[in-house]
Image (tube, rainbow, N blue to C red; front, side, top):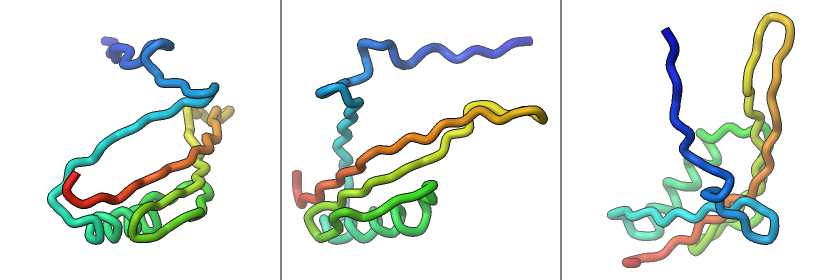
Length: 97
C-alpha cells in the first residue's frame, strides 16, 4: 500500500522577491500587542530550538531574528541527508489592525 501527498507548491506559487523566497502572514489575535509580543518572544526564546539563532531587534513594536535550522530530509543506517536553512523572521506588533 502506498501513500502520496499532493504537491502544495509549484515553482510559480512560491513568492520570490529579488531572488529570495519571501512569505508574509498576518496573524489575527485577540491580544493587545504587548501580550502578543510576550508570547512570541517566549516561543522564539524557549520553544523554537533552532540550530542557531539571534535576536537582531526585539522591542515592543517588532522582533527581527536571524535563524538557522537543520532539516533532516532522510536517514538510514548508512547515511543521513539533511540541509541547513537560514532565514530572517520579522514580526511587527500592532493593536487593532
